[in-house]
Amino acid sequence: MSQSTESTTESNPFTKPRFIIAAALVVALIAAAIVIFLLPKGEDTAQPATVPSAPAQSASASPSASNIAGKSVCGLPASSETTLGSAPKSNWELVGKMAAPTDPKTFGPGLTDDSGFRSCFAHSPTGALYAAMNVAALGSSGASELEMKLADKLLVPGAGRDAAMRETSAGASSSGNSTTIQVQGFLIKSYTASEASVDLAFKTDTGALGHSTLSMRWMEGDWKVKPADDGVTFSNVSQLRDLSGFILWAGI
Image (cartoon, rainbow, N blue to C red):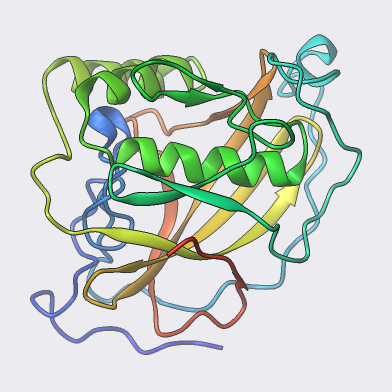
């Protein structure tokens, strides 16, 4: 089902994407609070399509078998499931101002250091979902130490991570943005043992709804985010009229 597009840039809180994870401009998937995402004028705002089956991966593009197999780096149990059709029962805690799911013995984060940096998630669809949400929450925290660790440790190595690290080192920060957002729902759009695509729906403190997708890769015993070469981590950013088509899931 299609949705109408906002008529003016001024009235649309989803314009001018600065969706770069560096300095965790993960600060506003819906208005500027989790990698600031703002819907460009005239962009389609259709609801998520039916979840597609995961595309076959070429041997050259796939992570090695040693990266795919086994438990997480902190020993969380793996799962052979490839779908997630209902919301997991989750405990939530605030990371900055955003509620993030937590189940340290089953889905993650299995490791949280003294700075509050969270990592190590289960090799399962639920683990990928928890990882995506925790990346979003860490990125919206406004804490420079967490932002640097996020770019360094939870992004897939390559040009995108390098760009994110440069931005973070240069002092870019999301902390100046006063907009807060909270997750409201999700879809696991595709899932294999090595790759996952997680679509998250958010709501701002003004009631605006939006969604965007994170591409995840299982490597080195954890889920990491695959950024674009310019450091952008969220894709398919768009505004929503409602949460139709999403599995409802929220901590606040």
